[in-house]
Image 1 (cartoon, rainbow, N blue to C red):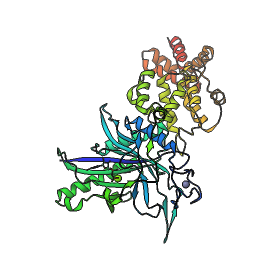
Image 2 (cartoon, rainbow, N blue to C red):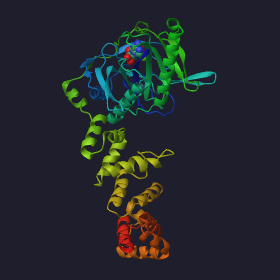
Image 3 (cartoon, rainbow, N blue to C red):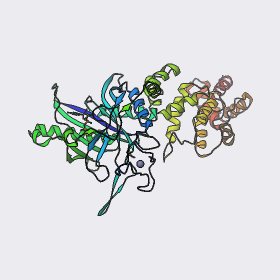
Image 4 (tube, rainbow, N blue to C red):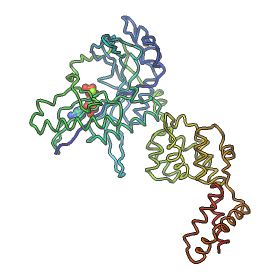
Length: 474
Ligand code: ADP
Ligand code: MG
Ligand code: ZN
């Protein structure tokens, strides 16, 4: 009887080398307060100058979401005092952001999809960090002035699943464009979830609650669920008006509840006004031409994989879920192997070895090697079963595929003379089984094949074994 309404704000830290308005490095893990200068410390008289790379990356995102790129945009000051913001205002884009009116499509498992509208993407400066240490609090301004792109959706999502699909799609687009690391744990992809409920069918928007401080997809899902429950219970208990107010709440991962953090300010509280220190941002035709060139995006890549490699949409979706995975697959395919085998050896076999920090980016068996291993299975140098042993070995030992096959003695025996000898041995050793088989117990054929394979330690070519046994057993 309730409908859920969700709108998402995502702060993406752009991976530029230098900060938004000064030439301080953006790299973190440096000694506290060393990546600073008069501009990002907001010392009087220091003037900000826009980093062009930020504009470039913002426009790439705008292009990816089919948005309007404003050829003129402006910077505004959002006033608030906080110890980690030495200027007592944040430079952002309120009135005319660089990117407006985009869309992003989410795909459901049943093949249907939904378009989520994106209101805007605007550039803004990040604050520093407060570090609380017992009784004292310290401020580290290394992050102050780091460029953020805030991407604000319309309230178009109606449940946690849709919100997660939207975020995963956006996350993957950012990685594909290589405009940010989008690491949720490290805070380079920060999500604020706005949630409200309304009676089913009602078109009006009810009071929204903003939930912050959620750093994984799993917790976002959880936060939405508990917040929806809190709001609908308040409604059912007749205390909705009193208890559900426009506010910012924190998600407590341990207790799995949301808690009030502060009342939500209205725009007027921030005393927004155009920043007099900054020029308007003008995107020339020439810049637009360069900045709107973007690489192939996840959806397009998925559709291409379906066509080019004749795999189904689901598998293509798995392969293109990250750029690393998609590139890995395509590098394997250069070994001229079947897509079906490449898919299995990548998404089933290789992935099963990923633990303890081993992942696709640092896998000891790289794409070329795995592709070549598959090739060795396809050209029958080794059996598929032996392939698994070779893979396991190569995950620990840096050898090339052929050397590993030799070291392990797994080269498949297709030489019929050798296999014939093995078959004869097995037949001689099992006279009773031979009799039963020849008496009509066809099922025993598998037993003989198994025995020969075992005797050969899996190296006999099963097809040859089959042929020879058939002939010998009659
Ligand atoms: P603020 O910075 O004050 O949070 P923004 O305009 O940046 O405001 O973001 C508002 C977000 O809240 C948007 O994502 C919008 O879609 C969403 N939103 C607005 N109204 C509602 C509502 N009633 N229920 C859920 N989400 C809402
Ligand atoms: Mg907000
Ligand atoms: Zn600086």
